[in-house]
Image (cartoon, rainbow, N blue to C red; front, side):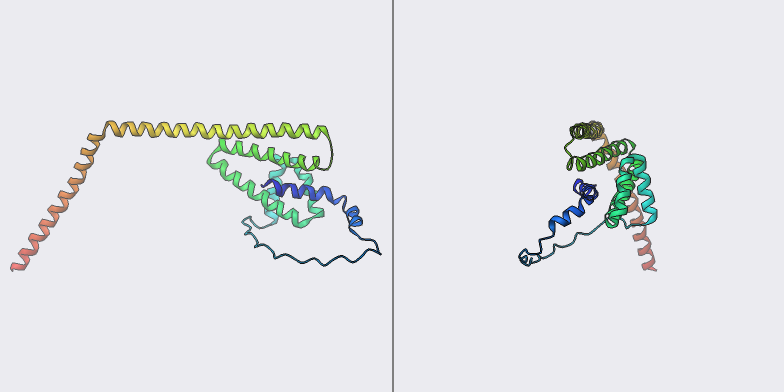
Length: 220
């Protein structure tokens, strides 16, 4: 999930507590001059939302995923559900999509799944702490954020190392195949040519038989 989307959800929750104060600040005095009308800007073209739709079944799956891998986020979602239903459903849709992507990856590549899951867990915690740190000067939160960023970089190094090792293995296989083809080049050419010509000769023989039969039939 994108960092800015998570932060929007977290800040939404944390700022709701100051909503009444914000309204008071935004309300002009009775004798204040009328505000100038605001000219609306043309709306940008809406982006296509490729996320799955919200359903109770997907909600249950997303919450189970969160409960297993980031229980603290469950509290945030509960608050979001009570205060901002639309944002809550958007979060659930994104979480369900993430859980499905990770589930498919687990079936295909367990090593990469474990690394990507750990990366998601770290990012999720970073985003939650960053939202809290944004409204509170707490050295403990700052220290936790730094520690999580260090873990995030370490996780990225592990993913890249895995990719590097696999790339080396693929390169080694290609080099082995290349060496074999190069060494056996002449023999391979002869073998393939012999097989090809065997088929060509059979086709020529069959054609000759058909031609002879047609001539015999025509002479009668």
